[in-house]
Length: 251
Image 1 (cartoon, one colour):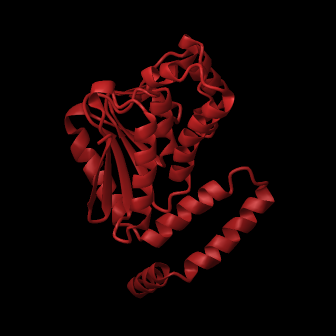
Image 2 (image 1 turned 135 degrees about the vertical axis):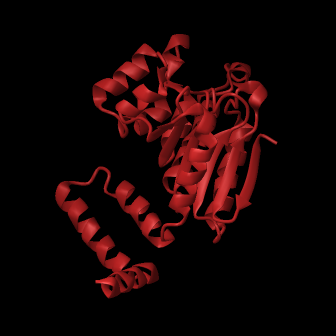
C-alpha cells in the first residue's frame, strides 16, 4: 500500500509508504492519500492528522518515471493528473482538523508542496526543503500558490527559480516551516506537539483554521467582519462556554 493509516485515538497517523521511491507522488499515492484524509475528516474521534514519510525522506516530489511514461499524452490528460494533485492540496486546506507534516530527510518539489500545504511543519534539524523543478525544465506551478502564502515574494522567487534546497534552520528563518527539532529527539518532540494540539478544544481549533484561511484575500474591513461573525459563533460553542465559566470562577 502506498499509504499506511492508523487512527490512534485523537491522532490520525498517515505515512507515505514508498520508501524505495523516496515516497514519490504517484497517481495511486495521491488518490489514496486524498481518500485517507477524507476518512480522518469523518472520524469524530480524530482531532489532529499527522503526515510523515517512511524511510529516510519525507517525499521527493512527483514520480518522474510515471511522468515520463505519460509525456506524450494530450493536454486534457495532463490537466487531469495535475488536478489530482491540486485536489489533494485543497483537501488539506479545507480539512476540518489541523494537518501536521513531520519531515525527516528531504521534502522536495511536490513533496515540499505537500509539506507546506499542511497547517504546521515540524522538521528534523537535518531536513531539507526545496523546489528543484526548474533544473529539469519543469516548474513548481501548483505548489506556488502555497509557497507564496508562506514566504515573501523575493524569497519565493529565489526558491523557485534557483532550485537550490535549503536546510531546516534556514527554512524556519524565512517562515517556510514551523518548528525545528534535534534529529535524535525528533519523534518525541513531534509526539509532544501533536498531543498538546489534540488536547485543545476541537471546536476552537477548527474555527481558527477555518477563519485564518477564509480571510485570505479579503480586504481589511471584510476580514474584520468575518472575524466578528466567527467571534460570535465561537462564544456559542460548549467549549467556550465551559472555558469562560471555569476561568471566571477562578477570578
